[in-house]
Length: 118
Image (cartoon, rainbow, N blue to C red):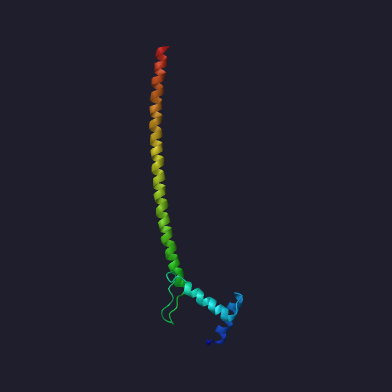
């Protein structure tokens, strides 16, 4: 077995995290290793250098860009749907007006025919 040197603050934080997850330190370290081995690296790529850090602002910025992209796509799709619905209502309305005019002419012919026969 090997040991890992931690400063007192880091050791305390590790103890608290392990306790929070109902695990001993050794079991919690195994758990963390398994967890990080299974993280999809395409979601957040971990820093290549030790002193390089990923800030929450960078992650938030990426998330915001993703949300903006999705909202833009949704807005475009809603616009397309809105245009299609308007076009559909226009066709229905025009067809309905044409049908109404045709029906009026038809009824007029029938009414004239009835009048002539009486």
